[in-house]
Length: 372
Image 1 (cartoon, rainbow, N blue to C red):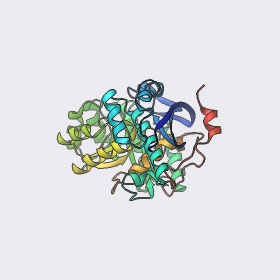
Image 2 (image 1 turned 90 degrees about the vertical axis):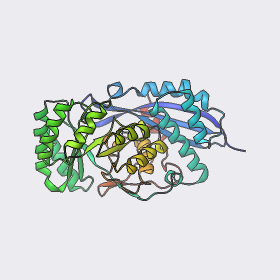
Image 3 (image 1 turned 60 degrees about the horizontal axis):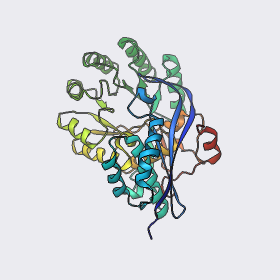
Image 4 (image 1 turned 135 degrees about the vertical axis):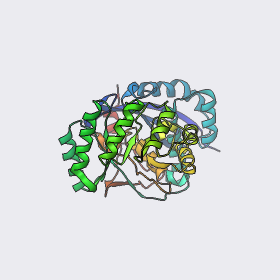
């Protein structure tokens, strides 16, 4: 007899960051994760995670709303249903609820973890199998202070922990940001790739000026310079400069990717399981992007280890990650809630082994950081 879903729990977990993390729309000192635990009638448990950055300053879902959605709307639809019927359950959720992709991503991840444990197979095997076991990971320099960022980059390069860096800009005057970025690029030279993330902070004319300056400074990639809904601006900018644009907030799902590609966008896309609605959905975005000749990048919403590992299993199945990944979320946190943290080394991270996600909760740490 097939195992059925017996319980679903959504837990808010607050973990401090190692330093303030400055974005264009917010500065983060604590990361809040929603940890989802799905238990079946055979006693197995699947884990998932939903995380965002900067709460509602970033997008329409907050950790609190994700928990409410799962508790109030998703759980009644999923309880007593066959645990392995992932596609059927996905359709059931999508017919009854609109949007809420962060919450859906946590549920899909937990169901995949549960199936992996049942079959004694790693999650990537359920997705077709890993092409890569060691995945490149960049680091975001987001202190806001130029010399602090330079010192941090040099230390990480020396330790061979990261050789690609992203800078969060857009909250200051344009030329202040450009000088900040150019100084860091000059300091690291050809030893590191330097990219910037504007987090939608510029209008098109500001973006055109900014990209011209960044192109001259030797920057390799500009992420989401203009607001997410302004697809035409993103297309025009991508055709105006040889400095590539990384579409992030503009592309949530495969439909968004098709719309942007068919309009003539040339560049790359930040894949994120959270905004797509889960690992399976993020890989659909990758398929459309690849068909359109658009480069792939493994993006993060600064997930903890559970969400990061779910994404890594998906990214491991992709033939080419043209721009690597940014799956450094756990390194930004002062502590972890899993028994064995991820192994970051040689400018990347090793894909965990073991069934499902390959991670186990540390119940004491979960209790310590669980919101009361």
